[in-house]
Every structure is written in C-alpha cells, then in structure tokens.
Image (cartoon, rainbow, N blue to C red):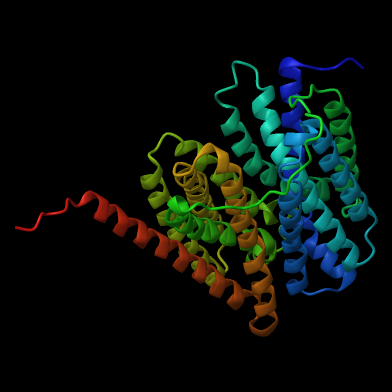
Amino acid sequence: MARISGGRAFVAVIFAFVLMTSGVLIPTPMYGAYQEKFGFTVATSTVIYAVYSLGVLIALLVFGRWSDTLGRRPILLAGLTIALISHALYFSAESTSMLLVARVLSGMSTGVFVGAATASVIELATPTWRERAPLVTTIISIIGPCLGPLVTAILMDALPWDLHLTFVVYGALTAAAIVLVIFIPETVMRRPGVRPQFQRPTVPAAARKAFAVASVACFAGFAITGLMAAVSPQFVAQAIDNPSHVVQVLVVVLIFASSVIGQVAFQGFPTQPAIVVGCVLLTVGSLLLVLALATDSFVLMLLASAVTGVGHGAAFSKGLASVLEKVGRDVRAGVTSAFFIVAYLSLSVPVIAEGIAARRWGITPASIVFTSAGAVLAGGALIYLLIEQRRVLTPSIPRP
C-alpha cells in the first residue's frame, strides 16, 4: 500500500481521532448489565467510570510531549494499540477487576493518543482547512463522547450479544485505523540525540488568577458532566418504564452535543463575556438537574443536559483561551496540561465521591447534593467574574 497524503491523510487522522475519543463512554449503556452479571453496586460502577481519568492523567503526564521528539506516527500507533488491547479486555471481561483494567487502559490510550493527534490534525490539514483545524480538534474531543454511547446503545437494542458486539466493532475499526496511520506521512523531523521529556504542568504567576477562575468553572462543568455520564442511565430508567438503551443514553449524548454547540457558537465572542455566559448556563443547568432528579422528570433531565452542555462548552473553551492569552508560547504546553489535569480530576473525583456517598444516602440524594455543589461552584465563579469586570470597567476617581 502506497503512502497516503494530502486530504486523505487529514481524513485518516480525523477518523482515528473520532474513534479514540468515542471510546471514552463506550461502556456507559452497559453498566446496568454489568451490575447484573458481576453483582456490583452503583458505587462500584461510578469507580469503573472514573478510573478512565486516572489512565488519561498518567499518560498525559508521562507521554504528553513524546511525539515532539519521537514523531507523531509512533505515538498515534501506540495509543491505538493500547485501545485495541482495552477492547479485547472488555470483550473477555469475566470480573469487575478486568473491567477496571480495561477502563484504565482505555484512558491511557486516549492520553497517549490525544496530544499527537491534535498536532497531527493541524499539521496535516489541507490549505482549505488549515485555519479551522484547531476548531476541528476541539469539536472532535467533544463529539467523540457523543458517538460512543450512542453506537453502543444502538447495537445493544438492535442486535444480540449485547456485552460483546460493540467491542468486536470497535476492535475492527481500531485495527483499520492502525493500518491507515501506518501509511500517513510523518510531520516531525526526529533529531538525533533528543530524548522524550515528561509533560510538566506549569502556571506562571501572570496567569494564576485567570487560571483559578477558569479552573473553578471548568471543574464545575466537567464534574456535572461526569456525574450525568456516570449515573444518568439509571435515573432515566427510574423516570421511564422499560426505556431502550438509546433512550437511556440520550441525556449523556445531549450534554456532549450541546457542548459542541456551545464551543462553536461562542467562538467569535470576547473571552470574558463568554465565560460569564457559560457560568450562568452551568448554574441554571445544574439547578434544573437538581429539580429533574428530585421529581424523576425525563424532560427536565434533557433540558438540564442541553443548558449545562452549552455552558460547559463556552466555559471550557473560553476559560482555556483566557489563560493562554496571558502566557508566552514557550509555556503554553505546560499550562494546557495543568488545565486538562483539572478537567480530568473533575471528571473522576466527584463521581467517585458521589458513589461513596450513595452507599450511605442512596443514589438520588447523593446526586442532588453533588449537583448542587456544582451549581455553587459555577455560581461562585460567575460572581467573581462579575465583580472583576465591574472593577475593571469602573474608572478610578483621583483623590483631590
């Protein structure tokens, strides 16, 4: 097979990128079936969901910058290979521990892959797409999690072998992606004697105030998103009699789809006003979700996920932009790593804490408490931003 180049190479990397990011939530519709098969609790299912972030964080910190020295293609292939192993473990899982290992490896595959893939999409973009390539990578990182649970749910509803077929399909697609990536051009010239470096998170003093505010909004947005992704299928099952797997994952799909809409819609907005709007929507969406959980209202769950998703997209993309505006090019990678560490911690720590609390209080009261805490965080970030904007806009009156 000849080397592929130009637009075909660009499309090949996008295909692999979408495939990898969709792996984030592949097992979401399966948690109920896994609970029945292995006999674990809702708290355990939240841990299985959350350990994905642990794998991502380890890989980001260790391998985040390796593609700059070893080349993009070897790191892309490493990420895809780890993903293929995780699919094989999911397929053959006969215990909770095997699910945990598969989930951690799935996270590691994403952490290894995503940095090199982001750079590759930008570097392989055709002239027509060059200016839009950064937006393409952002959209892929959010739209992938929409596709994963939706594809799984469709397969589970339409065909037998519900805990295995998805991983056969994804395994075959991942193998195809490996073949394609083997034949894309390398965009990094490997320099002799240069060794891979660890990705060290850094936040310079000039950006710390902006980082703190953006991190609070980011933490609230991802925490609420993580909570909804981890437990919303169970709440949908409580609100509707015998829902299909597709219906059970609609809340998850909608929140990530709305996040894409938020990122695209606010792309041309000034940074600070967009973050303010994002925090408003996160606060309102969280309160709507509290009401939905308290009343078992599926319609309110969908409305809450849509509002929260748009707020998440605006707060996340513009929050990161507000931080990067205040730092030089030479430290942007470290600052971005620090921001993503906050994001992935917020996807995992609150979900695990909610699972632990659910053992004592029950899943609904625990979810209401933690969602309310997310609303408080988003509201606190909003108040701080409004105070800061007022301080900046109010002219100082010189003393006589």
